[in-house]
Length: 287
Image 1 (tube, helix red, strand yellow):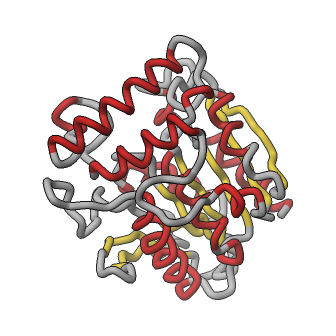
Image 2 (cartoon, rainbow, N blue to C red):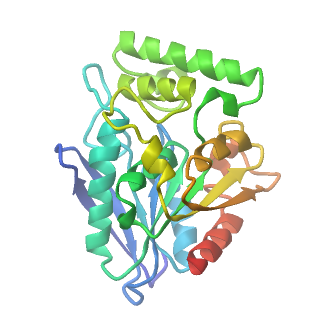
């Protein structure tokens, strides 16, 4: 651990009572250093982003590793009868986290660093409360509209999510760990995602809000990162989300990982992060 950094864990409580244990990486000697609020991909625990957090700290950032509902340290346990979707995460979890970050780092600018679903939900949240961040970094964060994938993968996306949503509704939740696809998650999350896959719009069953107008009005600097070779977030999919941000100052950048990086490109950058950290440093310094 960097000796100039203090790592603490705090319980963040959402308005509906859900909690998560969240790690705060502070720089006591530089309390005004920018804060990156890292939000994970679907079915991914916050602790998985520890190598990235350490790299960001070495680059002079303060970091908060947030948790998606139902994952990791979340008090919400995924099982039959537990119901939550995009609405609960955007309306309760993100606001509670960002307010806790604002209280913990009162003199520091805050930025979202959202990966995949964490970036999508973060964009939805900031479209409602843009004053809570100075900008956003969206890494491998696509609109899940099936047309963002090349044929025939696009048809596979459409059919696959429709099937997953129907199966989850019948089973009571999505048993991702059992079937080896992502992690366990609420059936409502799968229904929301399947709707967005089909329609391309962030008007989902769990939420009364049509996010499309507020996404178009979001006036923040945004760095949209495509990871080369990432089949889970192809360039057209990433642009599908960033193109909704018509009032934002969007910069597109392609991250190229090393040849020996193991596993999926969608997650490999978490460890092979040096060039991303440098690019984020440049982006934040220019804001």
